[in-house]
Length: 364
Image 1 (cartoon, helix red, strand yellow):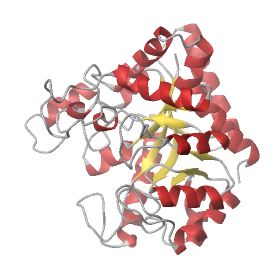
Image 2 (cartoon, rainbow, N blue to C red; image 1 turned 90 degrees about the horizontal axis):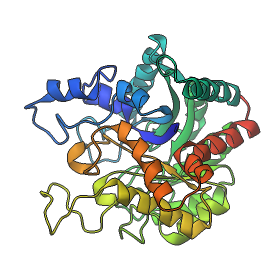
Image 3 (cartoon, rainbow, N blue to C red; image 1 turned 180 degrees about the horizontal axis):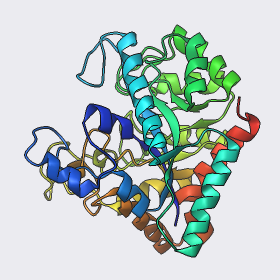
């Protein structure tokens, strides 16, 4: 089964964490053995495992904040620094493409050709899997120096954009913040619409979520989001938000960060009877909830966020590497999901959203 993953911080892992993602997960774990820091020696994502797991395409992020609350290698003192960091991520993806490791996908014709190659390979079962396709996404708009500078990013390959990340971001309130859209955010949305860049509502505060939906009438998505009804937290989507995204034809990618899967799970605490580990069945629960709330399988997908600042210690207990995403399809089938519904969740819904976006906005 082909997979499209709606959220992977590949460049952040390579540039900020110093991981050579062309090497296997197991090599990277060995290299980081004994290295201090969260997630070190416990990574789950690298290019060989992505291909082995039949991940044909992912939304690959540019990630840098400038919120006034500096965090090393993530949140910068000035927007200029955030701009430079995000540009370094973009340069990494382009270098990978130049070396033949990935293909950057930015329009409908490239998308269709790329998926056709993967489908032919899957049917034949012969030879190595094709290269991974990347759709460039920005997680939090802080690196965009001004709304009228969005053309520069679009020309460089940006196709999906989230307004916020954590905290009071430059364009909108994010996770852990209650602010709505800022003046910059209000000015940015028409530029997104003009260029046909998909709006990712992930990490938006509740106020920013609803304000953005009211102002922006283009394609929306939630690249890596779970359900507040299962894990009560502002980071998660309430049922009315899930319905609002579905009414706009949007897609919601289930994230695999354990605290977002298991109510009350404590980050950094050892799993025990009081803090049981999450499993891939919990991921299936999140997907199923989206399907039940919306009444169909058309709006549920995967947005794993694996190695988004954590590793196996904060991933489902029965997942070793990202190749294990394949097991989710079987879990859904065991719950009675038809083959077409499983395929839609594993890759078809993201594919439909991109095709609809790029049919309305051919390559500029």
